[in-house]
Length: 121
Image (cartoon, rainbow, N blue to C red):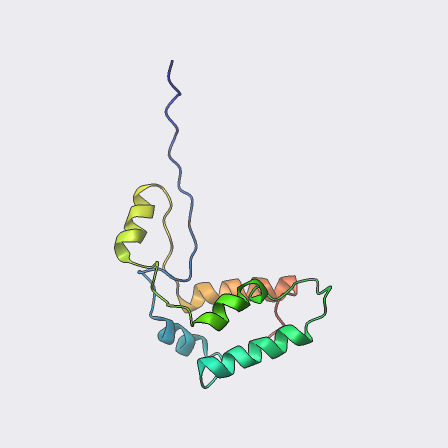
């Protein structure tokens, strides 16, 4: 006998780079977050933050492992976020909610609660 058919279930797929979301610049504007004047300036700020981070930090900066790639070239937002790709995932039971400022605030609030980010002033 063959394997029993698997029951389909909804498994949300969260990505900040999806075709149903606000453009990256609009999200930054909505969140009112500080933005470095250039990618190079941001990269220098990241490098300084990583150098200042203790080796045994309880919540290491998640960008540490990406530093080499970030130095090689800026990321391309929207590269995986085509609407067709998101529809493909949704058809298979993996819908991705639209990334909105409210959703990002939820993520950031949780990171603050976990101590991975400093509390907002």
